[in-house]
Amino acid sequence: MTGREDIPIAADEDVVRVRQVVRSFAQRAKLSLVDQTKLVTAASELARNTLTYGGGGAAVVELLGEGRRQGVRASFQDTGPGIPDTALALTDGWTSGRGMGLGLSGARRLVDEFELDTEVGRGTTVTVVKWSR
Amino acid sequence: MSAVERIPILKIGDVLLASIQVDLQDRDVLALQEDLAEKITATGAHGVILDISAVDIVDSFIGRMFATIASTSRLFDAHTVVVGMRPAVAITLVELGLTLGEVRTALDLEKGLAILAELGERAPR
Amino acid sequence: MTIETGRSDNLADLLRTGAAALTARWVELAAAPLRGRLSPAELERELSELYGALLSGVDSGARDVAAEPYAELRGQLADLSRRRARAGFTPSETAIAVFALKQALFEFVDRDDAQGGLREVVVFSQLLDALGLQTFETYAKAREEVIDEQAEQLLELTTPVVKLWDGVLAVPLVGTLDSARTQVVMEKLLEALVTTGAAHAIIDITGVLAVDTQVAQHLLKTVMAARLMGAECTISGIRPHIAQTIVALGIEFGDITTKSSLADALRHALRRSGVDVVTADRRG
Ligand SMILES: Nc1ncnc2c1ncn2[C@@H]1O[C@H](COP(=O)(O)OP(=O)(O)OP(=O)(O)O)[C@@H](O)[C@H]1O
Ligand SMILES: [Mg+2]
Image 1 (spheres, chains in turn blue, green, purple):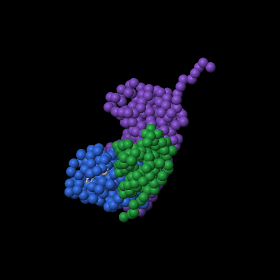
Image 2 (cartoon, each protein chain N blue to C red):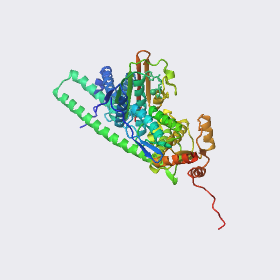
Image 3 (spheres, each protein chain N blue to C red):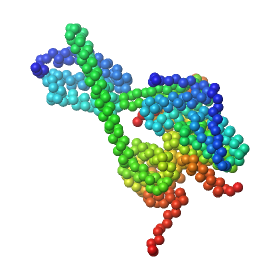
C-alpha cells in the first residue's frame, strides 16, 4: 500500500469505492472510530457532489505524517460548472437541487481542515483533512 | 455498472423488516424505498423496521431515505422505526446536522417491535 | 589523557573563522528534515543564537558540557527542545538540529584537510549518530505509549458508567470538564447503551465545577446522539451558576430533559420505563 490513491468518480459505485478507500486510510492513520466515521461521511458527501453537480471527476486520498500526528487528506476535484456563491452553498439547508443542503456545510463541521476552491465555468475542488488525536 | 443490490425485506407478523448489510449505493437506497412502498401496500403491514446495526456510515442521502420511507409509510398508516444505529454514526449525524423527521429510533429490534406494538394499540383500527 | 586543551586552542579558532560559512550550512542541513514546518528565518535565528553560545563555551577552554561556560547553551537547547516537543516534532527531528552542525563542520574541515584516516572516522561517527538517534527515538516512543496508556486509564477511572437500575445508566461527572474528557464520556456512554440495551441514561453533573461553551455543546450533542440511537438521556444536577453560564453562553437546551438531582432523574427514567415509584407504607 502506498500513501496515495486516486479514484475516478464517474458513477454511483465510485462513491462507495471512495468511502472504502478513505476508511482504510483513516484506519492506517489510526484515527479513532468516531473520527473515521466523520471523515468517511464527509468524503461520501463530497464525492456525491462531485458526481451530481460537478458531472464527475476524481478523488485523491493521501496519508499525512507530521511529527507525532498522522492524518488523512482527501481532495475532490471536478471540471464542472463551479459554484457561483460559495457562502450560499456553505449555508446549512441551501440546495440548488433536491438535496437537504447539508453536504458541504456538514462536511466542513466533520473535519479539521476544509478548503473550497471553485471557479464558475472551470470546476470545483474541495479538500479536507482529518488528524489523529 | 454494477447491478442494483436488492435488500431482502422480511415480514414478521404485520411488520416489515429490512436489514441493511451492504455498503449502500444511492441506487440501492432508491430501490429499497420503492420495494418497501410496494410491500406495504401489498401486505397491509402496519410497521417498518430498518435495522442498520451493520451500517458503518449514514450520510445525508441515506438519512433522507429514512425520512422518505417514514413519510411514505405514514400514507399507508404504517410507522417506521430505525434500529441499531451505532454510536459513531449517531455522533456523526448530530455533527452533520441531520434530523430524521418522523422516524422513530430504538436501540435494537426487540425495542423497535415494542414501539410499533405500542403505536398500533394507541391507534386501533 | 585529558581533553582540556587550554585557552589557545584550534577548535575555537576554527569555529570563529568559519562562523559565517558553518552557520549557513548548518541551517541548510537542519532545515531539510523539517520539510518547511519551521520558517528558514526562524531556524536561522535559533541556530545563530546556539552557535554564539557554543562558541563562547568552547572559547572558555572547557570541554565538559556540564560546566559553567556552557550554561547558556544548555538553557537554549532546553528551550529549543521544549518548543519542538510542543510543536509535535519527533525526538530525531529535534536532535538533528545539534547533529547537523557536526556534518557542517566535517565538510568544512574536509575541504582543506583530506587525510584518509579522518574521512573514515567521520563516516563512522555519522553512522553511530544515526544509530544513537534511532535508539533514542524508539525509547521515546515507548515512553510516550506508556504515558498515553496511563492517561487513558486515568480517564477511564474518572468517568465510570454505572447501572442504576434495569435499563437505566448513569455517568456521574466530577471536577473540571474539558472538551477531550467530555468527548470520551460521550462515546463511553453511547457504547454502554448498545452493550447493555439500556434505553435511559443520566448524565449527572452535580460534581462539576464549571462548563464552557464547548463542554456544554458536547453534553448537548451526547443527548441528541443518544436520542438518534433510540435512548433517552437526562441531565441532572445542573448547579445554579452553571445554569447561568449556559444561558449566558446562549446555548439552547431546548427540549432536553433536565432534573435538579440524580434522584429526580432516576425517578423520571423509571416512570418512563413503566416502573411506579411509591413511598413505602411504614405502618407495619
Ligand atoms: N462540486 C460541485 N460543483 C458545483 N456545484 C456544487 C458542487 N458541490 C456543491 N455544489 C452546490 O452547492 C450546493 C450545496 O451543496 P450541499 O452538498 O451542501 O447540498 P446538496 O448536495 O444540495 O444536498 P445534500 O448534500 O444535503 O443532499 C449544491 O446544491 C450545489 O448547488
Ligand atoms: Mg451534497
